Amino acid sequence: MRNSNNFFNAFLICLLVLSCSKEDKDDNAVVPPATYEFTRDGESTVSFGGQTARLKMAAEIYSALKDNSSTKEQLDNMFNNGTGFSDSSLDASGKNIGSKTAASPIASATVKPIFDAMIVDFVDNVIPAWNDDAADGTPGKLTDETRSVYINAKGHEITQLFTKGLMGALVTDQILNNYLTAAKLDSGTNRDDQANLVLEYGTATKMEHYWDEGFGYLYGEEANVARADLGGNPTGNGVLVNKYFKKVNDQAERAGIAQTVYDAFKMGRAAIVAENYTVRDEQAEIIQVNLSKVIGYKAMDYLNGYVSKKDAGNLADAIHALSEGWGFILSLQFTNDGTGNPYFSNSEVNAMLAKIDNFWTVSSADCTSMANDIKTKMGL
Image (tube, rainbow, N blue to C red; front, side):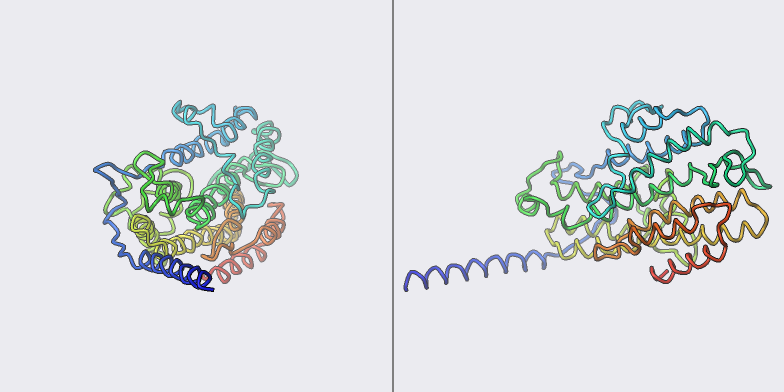
């Protein structure tokens, strides 16, 4: 009986120690730096080269999807193999976009094949009809007073569907549903390794590096992420989310969202250094909700833009807007409401895309209704 009591007392002491340890860490003060600068022994611990490489790859693929000399082999290699770029450093990076597209634990396996199919559609159907007049059921070129677009038989401007689809399927998914999740940050022995400063990435721990990789998917093409004014004035570099992050932030009624996200990235990274995981997870939630809003805002804007451009008689411009809207609608399934759930499920997104499948016959009323649904559901 005495041995049993001793064992029980020891067990309670262990629980108390563990509990106090956790509480103490959660009480650790977190002081964010003025800019996204973190050092150890005088050396920077921040790196996200792989993310910068993928963002640059996306820009070259975007250009290739506007070029009628592109081939399936070329586009497939660029997307899935990470080769064939004019920037030789990208070929040598060992990175690619395809393997990171719709690759988080919450992503549907049905999404990545959509991107591969768009490459085939562009080369097999759009390029051969480059100089033909487009019509319902016929790919080709459509021109109005404002622009010309090269579209498939359903009126889809593949360049825009593909690139805007990557806003969610690559960037948003990797940041919100992978790198900034507790499941990723706390995987394996990461908490113990942070406490013991086990450095796996040069001067950084795994947890620190994972957070930086999430940061890099948004800011990876900024010339200087340690700019004191970056929060209020992102440059909008590249063709993916940072570009539209700036567009949203530049609107008076939406101003401040960039500062909110940048401050949360800094605070969350500082919380990792301080081992205060309550604060870390609070900052991740702030980023998840606010970056999701960027996707929602642009999906809503382009749906409304289609209606106004169509009403103005500019059909090519309207189809261009709807093509961008299609990509942002696809991206809605990769948003995160801060609890690990998207604002719109894969099935809900597919139902929305089905309503606008043939751009030649899209109902303006359906577009307006979908834009209003997005606004309401996401609290925009």
